[in-house]
Image 1 (spheres, protein in one colour):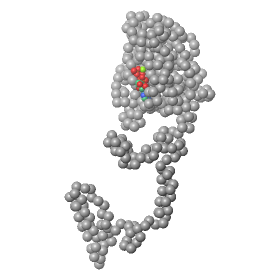
Image 2 (cartoon, rainbow, N blue to C red; image 1 turned 180 degrees about the horizontal axis):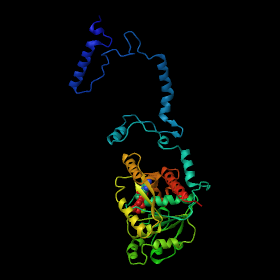
Image 3 (spheres, rainbow, N blue to C red; image 1 turned 90 degrees about the vertical axis):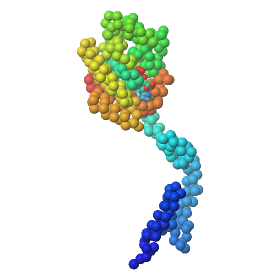
Image 4 (cartoon, rainbow, N blue to C red; image 1 turned 45 degrees about the vertical axis):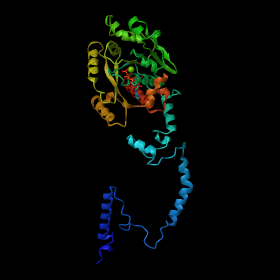
Length: 400
Ligand SMILES: Nc1ncnc2c1ncn2[C@@H]1O[C@H](COP(=O)(O)OP(=O)(O)OP(=O)(O)O)[C@@H](O)[C@H]1O
Ligand SMILES: [Mg+2]
């Protein structure tokens, strides 16, 4: 029979020593240290044995020191020199941890991008379509779409601008009517909209033909814009006493003689007479919904108004398209909103979802759509795909 101390894993005396060490550590208020001498660890040197690493390990260390340490110092990767990987416990890491941000080594810049440059360039070519090769099917009739949602800042203007540019770059003749006194769609397309510029106000109030107020958009063939100036702010009041006050935009569009495939009307964030004019002029409503908590609030009111216009003024009106915008993949909330909207509206919701993207929000500052500002970005690609879906759905109704 073996003595206590002779038990293979150190036996009772070892346990006692570990306990003693733990007690001592607890008395000093320090975390318990590993019992390095409590029990012989597998592979540890026994008395009389060398503590030198075996030959292979020494060799490995040598190779590592000569070669890898240098490589690590400069971190040369496929795309060039990466910044040196930081230690896990650097001051920067501690600051990051204190701010609740991830710590530790960062990926090189190239690896942080969703897709490599080559793929991004490919996407840019697809979006810009320089050779005119990718064509989105043209509808048999001009599709007039009101981009509406009385909730502010949900992406109406951004969607109207980027979808219009996308459709125009792929073989469709498109007009954007800026029906918001803020004039954001005009800004986004780089079209002047100061008070002297002929605008949609002139068409609505003075019955000026649309072709006299429409202007081409720089760099985008087949795209026209009817700008909005601040004059439009007073038009809601002026319209009230006018004959056919709800149908004035419809009459303006019907009087436009050049052939168009799409008219996208960028509505203001209200359900006033301007939006009613858009709903009377359109056959389709495109509702952008922001993937945020309050996204669905107020939607009922918009749908009721659409039903009212349909019942009394425009029987062919229908909500044909819902586009989810500003989707933030890092949040569960965005996913929940998407599920909820898809569950409620089914196939009306486009499969393409527009992500929240800095590039999308930067573009208007340069008087550009994201399609031309950063055509390889995910924002541009998602708007391209959304436009393609819209065109394909239109083609299902009959293409020309
Ligand atoms: N996908 C996106 N990612 C990041 N920012 C976005 C995105 N879409 C829109 N934005 C930004 O959100 C803001 C609101 O967008 P936008 O102006 O298109 O909304 P809107 O519904 O037209 O607003 P309003 O009701 O005032 O007319 C803008 O600053 C825009 O640049
Ligand atoms: Mg807007």
